[in-house]
Length: 284
Image 1 (cartoon, one colour):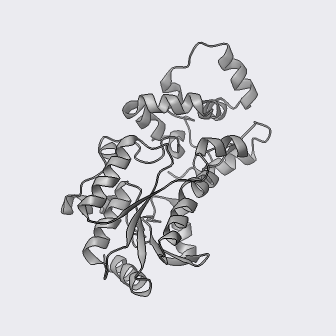
Image 2 (cartoon, one colour; image 1 turned 90 degrees about the vertical axis):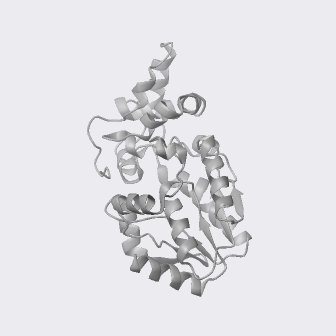
Image 3 (cartoon, one colour; image 1 turned 45 degrees about the horizontal axis):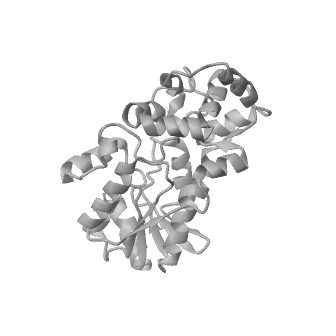
């Protein structure tokens, strides 16, 4: 906790006009509680980015949490719907960040890219930073942990440090190095009210972000169990389901579409896992 408080206090003392990026997930809930207890001054607002792909309960939880901590809530939205971005750029946010790039590099001509990073940047990160600047804040606190639980975030934390600058906006990650066990312990100790979707084991953020669908865990499987109607809409209406099948069966997108045209339907559980074995670079 000492390192967390040092990062938090140093960042806020340097940038007292700041916001907390609040997704409604467990990590950002812990961050918000740490800020409420230990920050030298409170944030000017919570920034929540709503893409339209989250469960409805997430926004309800975010609103209730802002009220509980007596903080203003700003709900930002991307300039372009994620599903429109997918079609325009020919990408789908599947397979995880690093392993998605690996898959794409070895599957040219499949009709799309597996690219979580571009979607997340355009649909979540950029709108959140834009909203932060619009309220005049110079610092955004984020709940990224960058530990052994996530190799890519760990590399970012190692390269950037706990406080870094993005086009004149300071970004700080006070929870850097926190493990899953430490987060769970903090939640229990302080009896934090978590997103009901997370408590049930569902995906509190964007439902389609299926990095864990590759091997042992699956956000898609959780979505099928806890948000089946919404998942079905996303799979059918956005073309995400076609891309998932293309990765799973190693077939180009046109071939998948021809096959689907011959079938009445596909059992929902087919979308649970992209592969039975991990892809190269999968962040286990």
